[in-house]
Image 1 (cartoon, rainbow, N blue to C red):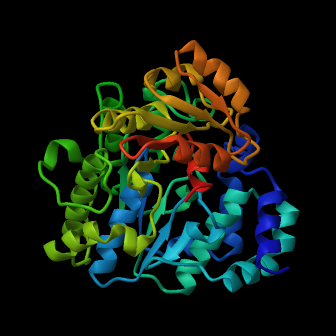
Image 2 (image 1 turned 30 degrees about the vertical axis):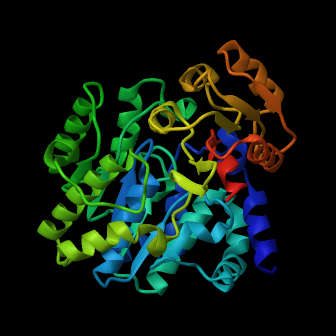
Length: 406
């Protein structure tokens, strides 16, 4: 198989959450452990930082990787989902994994994968860990796929665990309360491994404290400890908290390990994060006159922050290109959106994409008015044509909508 055939095989072999949702979820780590044993346990040969949380995982992971790169280290970065190409998930110093490595890895282990019916995510985690070991990285930043306790990445024992925040998302897997979701995320806290919490509230803090007590882990609440941060090329207002989380994490990393990170590396790492890691889709500006912003926020916790920032922008008319996936609670997210806007309803090219007619009907219940379009690109084109120079265009609702226009 060539690269494209290999990636197609990975996508099609078994359900993957990115496209199919609930049927891809495995509430068990036994398969991942079986795969890791087959690969001679690469997870035990890596120094890692493990990053979980409802929102901000990708930005936090990328900021950590960028600062460590600026400090002169060879840094692996594992994130999900990808926007354009599968290889975005696995990078070293911002360079995507080689196509040849993906092809050779799958070819070598294909019969084993098929015998044990591994999921897309399990195979991808195995590939990432194997690649990072073979490339001899100094450290790898590992972003959790979903949850934490039962996520395939959770076979590592990291130098540090990081939990960015807790919001209601993926409730069909992780629970319907903030406490239940915090419990799942806290599953990445390991015995005597320090943990950094980005944001907390009265419901989640006791869950974190209880778990840290059980594992004898030092626990640090970044929002209480870090008062000031540095400028970053990531322009979303919500990045301030991610930056605080990263600063606290780096502080503990310096205290507890041999990694040497100075203030200049932190400053340049923050400023060069997009260039260093290729991170996209976070309050990303695509045009001027009209100003065009896209953002991958897709749940109540994330969207509320993005929409608040839009409220503070100055414009004549607001145009919103919007599509969501079918497992989102529309009653949770649609009330967040402004009534005084022109909507362009669409669906991402994804098995989970919600029919835009259904989205339009439900949105009208909340006073959100607009037209239905056959594709994201058509909706985006129409918004671009209709918007005047002093208007504002926002593209979002789903990671997969953003993926189609950047």
